[in-house]
Image (tube, helix red, strand yellow):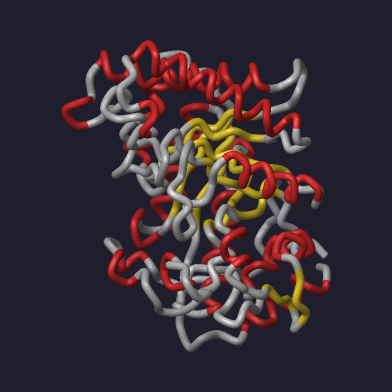
Length: 369
């Protein structure tokens, strides 16, 4: 075992005084390991300093030195440019170029909205709000092609493209909404037409033969039944995709046993690769407590060591997915250092850096050296 991972195991052996589960051996390395760093620009601009071992440096370079090989960026159509909602195309090209220059892979997360799209919000961009369905379908395809083409021309073509963000209930509501009273054949036909339009746009924006993988993202990583409900409809409509993306936050999605059961069931049902495209765990108290639907599922210590134990356990579960279909994990918002003038989700308690900008031990689990 290489020295850094041996150090990490020794560090975790000094238990917090908790009997919470933790890996008995180094967690396995996975093909895709990294993070969503979409807010890095404004946090850097507000004065954040990122450090590893007391040495300040570029956050991407610090992560790359720890084995992170893939970074995800969200893209809004016309964001407000307030707080960290700065993710327009120009911003994304600049940050994606830094990612590609570091030698890492780039995952593009298309929200198809001017703001956050998630299971509770899928608001169309203001400029698209009055379009008929046919016009909206055409606009999804042309917009996606324009975005991917611009990234390609800048030397920052995405390696993975996510068509919609946490689209449990569809996207571009109400025309592309599914579930509840919208769980109808007509609405599923509309949603899958929009997804196919986005996928066509990705291919049109690239040169022939450019490698790209298409991912569809369902948020409920702990729900095998919900995942099957969603992807059964996707399969029935012959949507051409490569990767299943899932989110896993234990306070929202339940126990790691539920995640493990879902990964197994989903891999066997669809025979496709699965990426945990969002996940995190707190290293201290500080903002997530009021959001904890399943507080009981947070069985790891709320500490830097507990955060590392959580990530190690999740990596083991992903690696054990049948058919080697568990291909990786991405940490959400690791750069979330509290800085003056910006609202930071969770108060920075879910980051991979502490309040002073020092790298936390969990970030080193991706490091083979």
